[in-house]
Image (cartoon, rainbow, N blue to C red; front, side, top):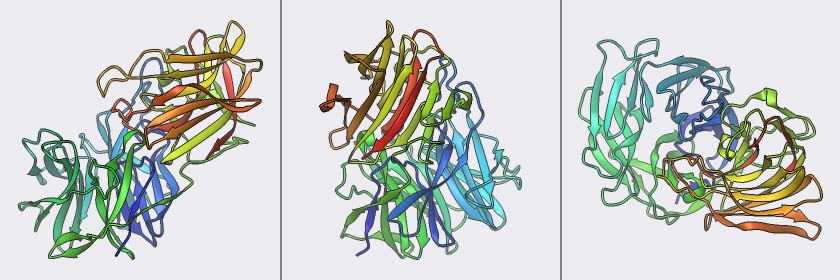
Amino acid sequence: MRLHYHFNMDIPDPDVIFHDGYYYLITTTMHFFPGGEILRSSDLKTWEHYSYVFEELENTPSQRLEGDGHIYGKGMWAPTLRYHDGIFYVAFSSNDMNKTYLYRAFDLKGPWKRNEIKGFYHDLSLLFDEGRAYLVYGNTDIRLTELNDELTGPKQGGIDRIIVDDAGNPMLGLEGSHIYKIDGRYYLFMIHSLHDRWRRVEAMYVSDSLEGEFIGGDIYDNDLGIRDSGIAQGGIVKGPLGDHLIMFQDSGAIGRLPVIVPFEWKDGSPVFEDDEKVEECKLKGLCGSDDFASGHKDFWQFNHEPDLSLVKFEDGFHITTDKVCRNIFHARNTLTQKIQGPVSEAAVTVDASALNNGDFAGLSAFQGDYAFVGVARADDKYYAVMLSNTSKGGIWDLTEDEGLEEERIELESSVLTVKVRCDFTNDTATCFIETPEGFKQIGTPHNIVFRLDHFTGCRFALSCFSTAECGGTAVFRKFKVK
């Protein structure tokens, strides 16, 4: 029996290679910066943060969260990671720019050189084969396109054809392509949904040539008893531990959790074991505590591209506001980190002494339906507040409403320690404030929900935003996770 492994953290759209003794996994990072996070493991069970591919994309006003602009649920999607002739390649499409980017480097730590690939290629996979390069991509209609020698666009007169289609699927047609050449044949792995209900299913199609017919169908319809939503969308990797298919599962508010499934090849097809023992992966350096003494740890990402002239790390994380906004979603320089399930809590001390009237500063369980606890200043007084949002629009629609203020308590000090507990067994976030008697709940437990307005799992986030005048500053110290 070979073990299956399960991540209890939002790491969507994994693509994995094995190189020089390590497995490397790249994941979608969407609107968070730095982006293109790469993880590393020697044994498939213990994973650590290794690097980021880019610090910024196009530096647009929306990517910088200026004015009312934003790129929630957009940005960098579904990357492909490959190693060929001494060079590492990362390619992905950006949904706010409607562009495709290709990064290349001699080392996964960088530096990375970037160029655009003319066109937009949804859920692309990169294939190098006999001195030529190809992209496979698309939704429902899956297309194979040959690239030019510079890898900057389609090759004139090169292969460009639909190789698989999933017409008539009323749920989700085939997408999430991962293509490989194995023993002279071409294997294409994809996800789609069952036709009668939403459930992830992995499919595989095979051809003897890139000009030939791709034949196949569903190969994996399972949830391993974890959650009845299916497991699919990912690629394969071969290493010293054998062959594995690395996919992910929709898992509620925590996000989309990778699952590593071993298999054996038989007659050119993967064969999966009936005995399904699942162990949780150990995650190192992907979340944690930080004192912000003179910087921040690598697991932090800004929500949108930051303006570093408005932040500093000096005995704490300092944020100064430069605009007036209605809610937490438009708070620039919000600092976030992923949450490890099934239950996790974070606490931080907020120094609100330099806030302006109308300012809010605090900690949140951050996604579309957020829960926020912190300090508000009004009429030259300080208050502990708990804000929440329950979205009323469609699943793609980001609310522009102000947060619902569930409770407000006047404070005697401008410094307050707050805490948020996220319980992904029932998808709730509960907020607390520290009192002389210990932590006291403020507001009510709030339902957190995975929605496509953010398209990401819930995170812990540190934010400061102004509703009346800009220029206020908050300082966050002693961030602790347990």
